[in-house]
Image (tube, rainbow over all chains, first blue to last red; front, side):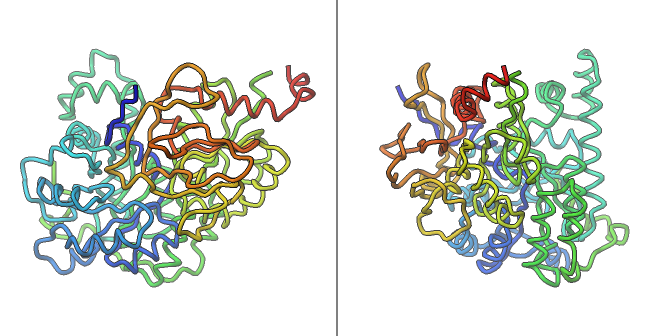
Length: 296
Length: 204
């Protein structure tokens, strides 16, 4: 007897497994999607404005125009992801009906719900969500996220927040591994995380889903830094198409994500690729404009 | 000594770790292969799932494509899952992407649809005993055509999804994402065979 099942938890996590060691690039046009694929991106994130422009222009940032997403899906042979606002499950329904391969419930867009995130288990399409620490990561996984990424501080070209978030997640995982079992319920309470997922973290010594980095990656060295800190793949938002030479920089970041543990390769990849995007000092951003604070 | 036999997993991009675990589970030493030096150490190689356009480019950029082709030509067994199956095919429908092109096969990418169409199913595999194999297909390809010397091993909806040509094995699905080691054992047996009786006697 043949039991065929679509969109199982294993197929959702499975696609994230296939993206490991790769670079997922933000693109706003079909032409950029082509450049990303030619440079060796493992997937593209289709959106209307990159985070740096959302930050500069202000206003409400929403899901991209379906026409734009379809144009990008038509040219890309690699997976296409798209962003829905935090809590906006109807945007997510639309993205699923368009057939995107992954949905990013993203703090880069203006949240639609300040209390609740999307019930991601209801969907056939898998979700990725951002986190600042382990508790937030496990809450999102509890809601059905099949991939976790750091939030970082998107659109800044400044890696400091992504480093903070990845270090925090990895430190908490190491701490839980060393805890006796009787302390785990209290730990789940302190983290605000589902108890069964805390048990799983202790057993696995890592997140139960792939753990990627995002938010402020602008150079090949930034990508390698996040990989050496424990990220299994890299999202680059504004860092490529806000730089001097997007095709060269994209390729250099791809090479560096592969050979993240080989400084010779990263040094060669970093040569003569033009200026990185202009960056922002996080301290100079007014607190209410910090994107990482969106979601809980 | 069994532990001297090293089986490599191409580690340029993709689901490397699950294959490493499966190789270890079969009692062999897994080696992540990103460089020529590492490739030299292994007696067989697995190309894991990933993005075929990405891995194809990285193979070319870092010069591993020629080295792998040379090794396979002198008998090293090669197993490709999903991306590996695509890169091993001589023809890829509608694509000129970089590939190894070692098998006399025509492969269609994303042939079962996009991610929402990804599925798992029970598969009868010719040459693998012990009942159906739970096969996970993710944006998977299938074989559109098989040339001479290529044997079909499994089918889904009338499409061939696993095949062997001499020392080369390819599957559209991901045995590394389950706990079932039978496909990896089958490949390990191919590696053992390729070493020949002389080498085997020396190792035991």
